[in-house]
Image (cartoon, rainbow, N blue to C red; front, side):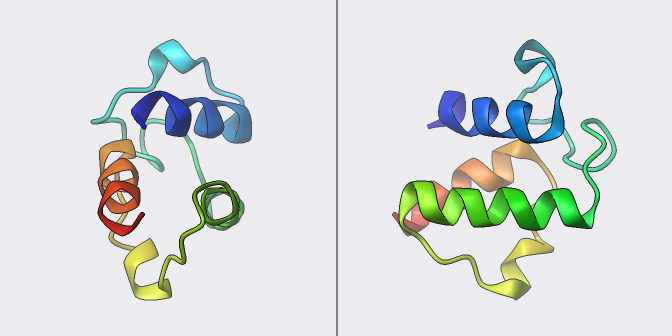
Length: 74
């Protein structure tokens, strides 16, 4: 799961996959802004067949948070 999410984030944010870890902050380490995060969430929803509630989006600070959410809601 982590590898799939990492590849999606790398493509979306134009970041080298090797620099993305579970601990990477989406905003501080990877340079995501709110628009990037919304596009990423929509792609994750489509790819994994889940719905991410708006109040949960703000709780996703790291790549690991995103992976954990997907795993818990699939």
